[in-house]
Image (cartoon, rainbow, N blue to C red; front, side):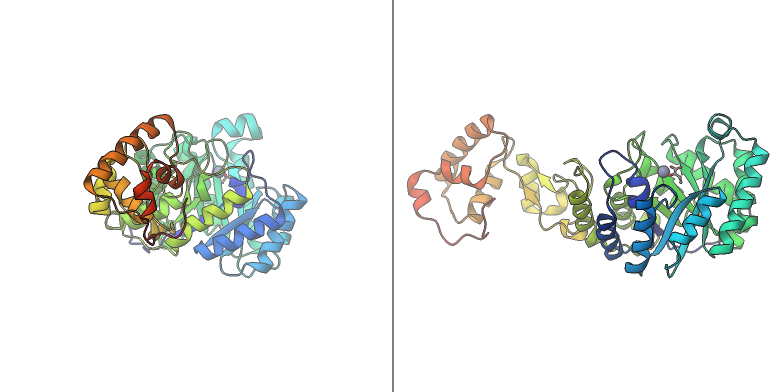
Length: 401
Ligand code: KIV
Ligand code: ZN
C-alpha cells in the first residue's frame, strides 16, 4: 500500500452525536462555549450539529461558524436534497465548511429502515454527494452501519461516493459491533481495493460506538490500518453506550507513540479542561473511574501504591496528570492507605510526627477509615493527639480539602 501522511485529524462530534444522548442536549450558547473549548483543544473539525434536525441545531451551527475560526465546521445531512441544502445554508459563513452526508449501507437498514434497494442506495449516494459538492469542496460520506454491511456492497458505495466527489470517507461502526482486528482489516481492504483512496488523498475516517467497550481500541486499530481522521466525543458521550472518547485516543497516541507513529494537533493539557467544560454544561460528569478525565484517574488509595508513588510516580502512573491538564496526583486516604501516605499528607498540612506519634495516629486513622468512606483533612486533624495539633508549622499546602 502507498505511504500516506502520518497526521491524524481529530473530528469532534460532541455537539452532534454526543448531543444525541439523554441528558446531553445543549442550547446554542452552551454549544458555542463547548466549541471554544474544542478550538482551544486543537480539534481539526467540529461537527456542530445536524442542521435539518431543528431550528436550534441550525442556529448553533451558524453561530459557531461565525465565532470559531480555526477548526473546520461541519453539519450532518441525510442523503436528501433538502437536508443538504439546509446544511449548506447553516454553513454559509464558515471559512472552511464541510457537509457530512450519510446513508445506510447494510441490508438490514436498507430493507427495514429505508425500504430501498442497493441500486437505489448507490444512486442516492452519488446524487447527494454531487449536490453537496455544488455548495462546498469538502464533503464527507458515511455508509452508516458500515461494519455490518456486505463487504462487496460497502466497496461499491465507497467507490461511488468517491467518484461523485467525496473527499473523506467515514466508515462507522454505528452499533459498536466490530472488534479491533476486524475493523482494521476493513480499512486495509478498502485501501487495497480502491486505489484512488491513497492515490487521490481521500481521507479514511473511523467512527466508533462503545456498545462492547471497544470504541477507543477500534479507533486505534483503524488508525494503524490507515485511517487519518478519527471521530470521537469528549468524555465519550453519545448514542447508547457513547462514542469513542477523544481523550482516550489522544492520550493513547501520545503515550504509545512508538507504536502508532502519528502526529495530531491535540493540545493534551486541554483534555481535562475540555472535559470539565462539558461536565458543567450537560447533566452528568464522567464516571470517577473514567480513563484520563475521571475524578479517580490519578488517585491512589492503597498503601502499596501510595508508597510506590511517593518513591517514584512512574511506579503507578503512565503519564503525569499535568500532561492532560490535571493539576495534581491525588493520594486519597482511606482504609487501604499506609503510614507513608498519612505522614505525607500530615506534613503537607504542617504536622511533622515522630515515629511513635505516627504509629499512634495511624491506629486512630485506620479505625476512622473503617467507619467513614471519605476522609477529609479536617478528619485527620481531628484524630491528632492535642500536643501534636498545637505544634503546627507553616503548611506546605495552603488549603484544606
Ligand atoms: O454512528 C453513525 O453511524 C453515525 C453516522 C451518522 C456517521 O453517527
Ligand atoms: Zn455515531
